Length: 76
Image (tube, rainbow, N blue to C red):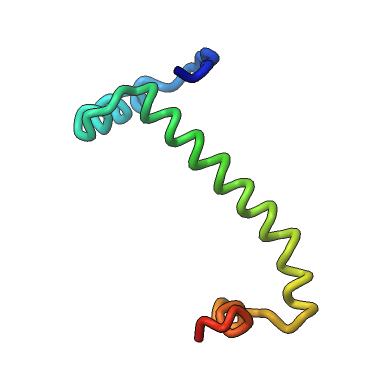
């Protein structure tokens, strides 16, 4: 079993109602839904941070598009 911490947050009633509706529809708990949403948000932020760090380096090497990347990787 994973070690877990507890996070308590306050959300507006309308947001809680929508969360409950979607959790019911998906068959997941509010905790599972919130955990996955938070994980996705953190991964997206890290991706954007890394992308911001590497795009200038790629552009300096003439890599501007996805096609440029694939060409460099020999995939197209």
